[in-house]
Image 1 (spheres, rainbow, N blue to C red):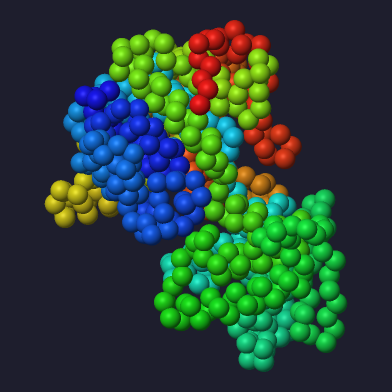
Image 2 (spheres, rainbow, N blue to C red; image 1 turned 180 degrees about the vertical axis):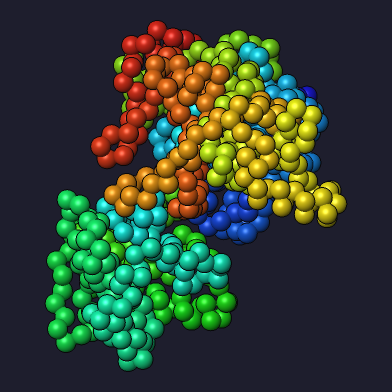
Length: 605
């Protein structure tokens, strides 16, 4: 332990606990990588940081703080992106073991691939609330991080958000869009509606638009924006339905334009919120009047801030930004008769916050160290895939170890290196293919494409300007124009990840489904492994599991997961599921698990 060189990737919730455990366990040669700086919200669980450290590098401060536990430890800190070229395969080869304490899938996949290339064992981990897991990865011996499919981020069709919201999250996403529309300087995409021309000359709407314009001159920007978003736009949607005879809200009541509290005919609408007496401030659901007042006040304050700064980026920790999104989403919900949400709930949804519990991080960190010691003592065969459960299992355990799986023979990273992509080659551009299939879905960093020995695409910083320009022009062509047609076998290389893949392309048309009643976005491609529509093989389910991507990549919120637990399924692993309240529950298949539990793996921390 004293002589082994350890790399720890991530210095957040798990990372702080892990570094403390490593230092106090006798590890004396540790290096840390983390890109982030310390934020106020980190201080409730990342105990190596204090208020004075806000804004400073996580890796550097963590190293300084950990030295107080054992000044003899040699700790080297890097503030940088784990995907930087300097952290390549040769960098990883110098370590005896790599410990992952990351908070996102992309970084995990990248480190996994480099460690496979460097043939360095990895201990991967994650927590989510009371749940946690630790996985040991070893090339050719145990499955890698990419051997099992990962849950994808849920997205919603733009038409659902704009026209037919039915859930609070739809309203929250809409409110974030409006914040960016009015307070963030960006290139706005024009939201063209093919039916707008049919109501352009409608006399009733022209009268309402005149009232809206008068609102700006008579009552100011704040009340004009309120009337625009929650009164005029709703009236326009209703009028559009009346004229086009298109049933936008099949089986549901149509939205209702909100009354203007400052008008003489004002009457307060009934609220869909529930009683919140006795709750703390941020968990209280605001009344209609409170939402209106908060909306007007936040718009006034944000308008002043924008005039000073020129632009305001969305941040869940920005007081006025969160006030705006909370009030705007609730007012939007009021028009569609959707339950209102508290400021606390809106912050969690808008920031994609997954609850982080310090004790879960501490338990998982301890298990990581125990697995690392086994590996260094050449006892890797005794390593387990360890789970931390929210509730005791059938054998009264909350910590459960099961046998590690062998590499998945269909894994395109560590085994087969083969995938099939079903995509519309006539409509899809090379740029879309690279950005959405290769980078986003497969997780590559800098892919190069070949048909046989013919180079189709590559792009790197050292290229000449004319070569870059040529590649950029080529990326705008469709796959068919580049002779990538059904049956084409593409060779794809990523030197940064030392990864080579064979991609068999199959032409398939995908309908651009703009049905307003369809909640999820239409599919644009399907990726499958050696067996049709399986990537990779799911060891528990007989049904195929397609990996799909959506047509529209709207960002619904920043990933603020503390440690990003990834729930996977196999015949030997517990599989957490969601109950009706969207809370993660412990596995139900306890009997099968109990047969694989090693009694010696009970750990008391």
